[in-house]
Image (cartoon, rainbow, N blue to C red):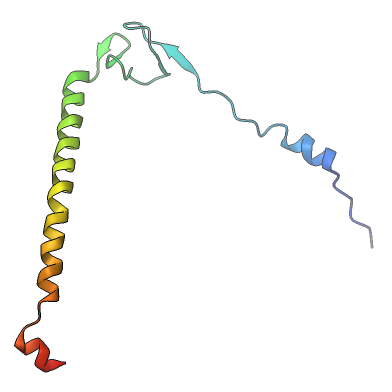
Length: 99
């Protein structure tokens, strides 16, 4: 029966030499000059290959409105939770008789 070969740390390091991460390919936007990922629309101006893909101002306004609505809901929620907790703590005659 043959003996198994040893794997030294140098051998492992040689194998792992190809595991390095590479930087993403960035391109400059032809409209605003901002760097963006290749084959995707520019997040700064919303254009791709000279065409407007999405309206940046409309998207920003929608995100701001969504964030405001979420903050408002968060402020209203704790008051509702406190009221529900108070309602849960109050006991009826029926609930006391069941205990």
